[in-house]
Length: 299
Image (cartoon, rainbow, N blue to C red):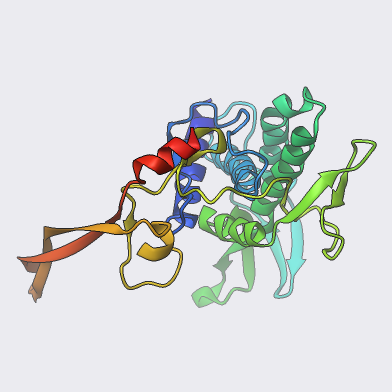
């Protein structure tokens, strides 16, 4: 459970990184102790991403714990033994290959358990997105090798499979979020039908969702929205982090704050870098809260 807890922290951080410039920035999940239960995000594409990235986080954490010898139930991948070959020629398996298949199996049993007790459309959606997240981690396994021979000539190589940084999985699933496909459950309850016939049928690697996302401008706990009041925005940006978009047209407040930074850094022989502390004033822009009438409309 300690490894799972570390995995939860990792995927929440990654989720918040991927959506740091958007109205929905994954912040609701930081305080949700039921992150492996049914997340309150309706059946939106944000929910699809959360289930995929959380499942990936469990795979990553458990696989890493196996390789580091922290779990009695698993160790390095036992199947990576003997000789093999790649485009550079033959090599010997050695070191500790990440036991990704054990991590995937554990995540499937643990994360999917609750969904398998539910026989509804949301469970089907969650199970599909969970699988997308699990397989995404395996996609970025890389072969790492150590050379042996005269002057590092690489006449002999010892290699092992290692997981890439979790950021690669996050970036990949973020792209899948952008291309997520809206679906409905088919009549026999075993699969999906595309909601818009102009779009292609989803594959096993596509994220799927049922409902359109709310705008996340105002607080709506049932939709997993904290609203954007108080969020920092970029006054000059025309993107999703810009004040016009982030603040949903409500305007923003500007506060001047003092900032202390390192400056005039010089290298001193040997071996230190010494800097001065410079103080300057910067403007911080934050979204205004909605007016009273807007709150009334939401209740």
